[in-house]
Every structure is written in structure tokens, then in C-alpha cells.
Length: 335
Ligand code: SF4
Ligand code: SF4
Image 1 (cartoon, helix red, strand yellow):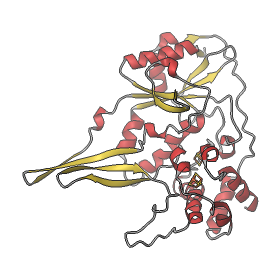
Image 2 (image 1 turned 90 degrees about the vertical axis):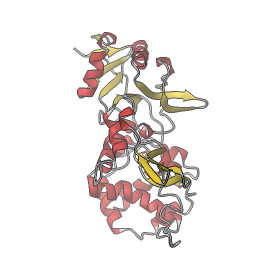
Image 3 (image 1 turned 45 degrees about the horizontal axis):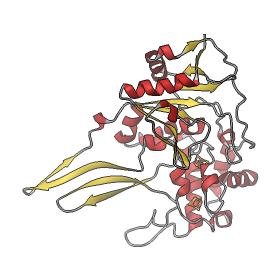
Image 4 (image 1 turned 90 degrees about the horizontal axis):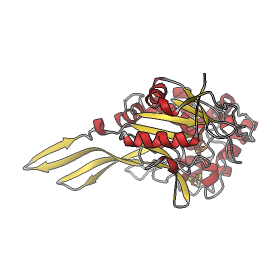
């Protein structure tokens, strides 16, 4: 019989995990924003709003040290961060557009080189997804192959039901283990009639047609029309659950320091700047073109997946109103 979980018991689940020393990350109100952040008690969970930033930083922090060095008595010692100390983590209350993204990124973080920082966090994290019952004008998950109740990427999945609470599905071994560990909180039976799902008002995109059009239109005037006004702020990349570019920088001095990964964005002017000062993408439309090409052509060519889950964040928060869905609709029409 299907199991259900009341909202109170969801809060108790968070509290119980915290007591066990598990790091629990979920949507939480901080100041004026809702963001995915470590919770300190279950009641902090804010499930009614899509967090401003995506959940990707749970696996891929904005900055992280990948090695440290120290020079003493003429000898240099290099040490790696101790990844064994990464905490067991439960990422809870994750919308389908955020839950799907880490699995899409597995391909690139385990491609020609296994990125232990990303992959170790993936291994130690259980994702509790939740179906969406509300959307706004920027949401377009259904246009890129997801749905408001897509299970992709979740280990345990919650569907809000009539009368409050959630129907619960364990989708894999991690989800089952978590449910078993706290079996007393899950009730057999109860109302399992789902609340109506969100209905993003969008037409599906033909992603194969878009890819084919991108293949032949590297120099199309559309890029200038769309992106001459792009401010190159990088907000779209930083808020995106699927953007994953980073730079590697050595910091410190002669005696000691560290090598760190920092998020980067192809919208930044210096992203492709060569040491010679030549920049092969020297104007903003070329940079925005790369954003679209990477998400809808290059990543599909290489890994067979689209690097966009339709979360709409880059539409909501672009300071100059560039709307990726409108761009894709335009390309869809031209294809
Ligand atoms: S490209 Fe935009 S809509 Fe797509 S996943 Fe990234 S932020 Fe969301
Ligand atoms: S958020 Fe808008 S202005 Fe900023 S880099 Fe992205 S497209 Fe350009």
C-alpha cells in the first residue's frame, strides 16, 4: 500500500536526520529570499516557492579548494582535501527541474576525467524531490521533456495530496534506505489523491530540430538581434541548475596557498580571453550564442542530453529581459 507523510512528519524527518548528524539542505527563507540552504530544523522548510538559486551548489559549490600547498625548510608539501569528511547529505523539497540537473551533469563530471569533488558529493547525497503544484510564466519544464511531477533524479519523491501531506514513493535503493530508516514517520494508507499539478503554459520544443538549426547557423544575424543587449553579468549561468563552467585559480603567496575552483560563466567577457589578449568571443552575442549552443547542441552531441531543465530562472532574473524560451521558440519556428 502507498505510504503517506504528513507535513508535521516531514518536519520530524528533517529533525531526526539532523539529530543523526546528517546535513539536510532544503528550501529555506533567508532574509527576503528563499534559497536551498542547510536547515537547522524541519519547520524551516519552505515548500511553496521555487528557490532563487538552484540546488547545484550542494554538489558543486561556487568556490572550493582542490589542493593546498606549503613550503617549509625548502620543501613543498601538497595536500588534497579530505573527501572522506564530506557529510552524508539529504537534499529535500527539490522541484523536478532542480532534481533532474545533477544527473544530467554526471555525464560531464565523469567524462574523460572523474571529478571526485562532484561525484563524491553525489554519492553521499539522497535527493527527496517534490511535485510542483504551481508554476509561473517563466517555467517551461514541459517544453524540454520534463513534467511538474518528473521523478528524474529523485531518490524519494513526494506528491502533495488533498487534505495536506504527501504520497511518498521510494525510487531507488537510497530512497528506500532513507524511508526504512525512518519508517515510523511514514503511514500506510491515508489520502493519496494528488493535488492538481502545475501547468506551465508552453508548447513543447522540438529539441532535435533546434539542434539541427544550431548546427547550420553559427553566424546567423539572430545572435546579434537577441544578445546585443546582454550585459554579460553571468546571472543566468550562476542561477542555472545545469550550467557548470568553472575556472581554476591559484591563491596565496610563495610560502603557502591553495588551488581553487570558482564558478565561471560563458557570458563573462574574459571567459575566453587568451593570455595574448586575443579573445575569440569578443562581443556579447558570440557569448550568448555559446550559451545556447552548449545547452542545446554541444551537450546533446556529446552526451545525448539537454543542458536545460526549463526552470525559468534565467528568464526571471536576467536584468535586461533576455528570455531563453522566446529565443528557443524563435529558433523552433525557423527550423
Ligand atoms: S537555461 Fe535557464 S531555464 Fe534552462 S535550466 Fe538554466 S536557468 Fe533554467
Ligand atoms: S542574465 Fe541576461 S544580461 Fe546577464 S549574462 Fe545572462 S543573458 Fe546576459
